[in-house]
Length: 197
Ligand SMILES: [Mn+2]
Image (cartoon, rainbow, N blue to C red; front, side, top):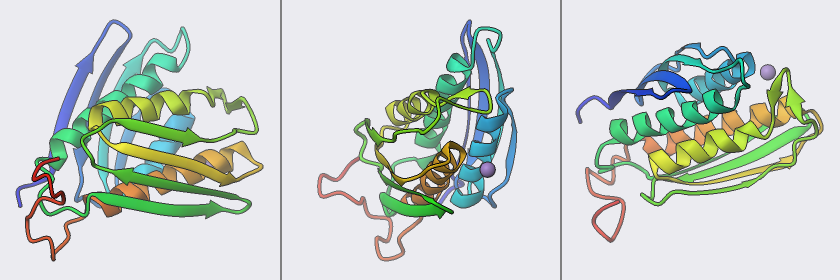
């Protein structure tokens, strides 16, 4: 199998973002988005997904974090779609339950080719650090639309909003890792009776 890597640059009048991804990485993140809590969450995705991420982002943070967070989701999704190639031989589905003390989240992903986000999370605070918790939905919607995945995110328990977010991003990384892993029994076949995804 050829290297599952991709680099995508996306420039708009609101943000300039470059994302490099290696699906078969060592869990390393190099990242400076200007949104510290988002950096902390992307670190979880890289580490628990065993994905290498190299991210350069500069956005219109003088307005707010919205465009930067959303456009990072979009660009990461584009990079994933390119890196994963034709999807032959992968598990396709991935899921994870991740706890952090009182918080527990479940994330399920399907590299279906069909964008769909089903997110059920009631954050107990409106902000974490200075980050608006509404923006997590924008991040995942951007990712889903451009990676063309079905993504179910459920926060099952949680009191502390930092814990809620962290369990979601750790479970997201773990679920991605399972879904993109190569299934030796699939032996390069397409994981769909349709013959394509
Ligand atoms: Mn933390």
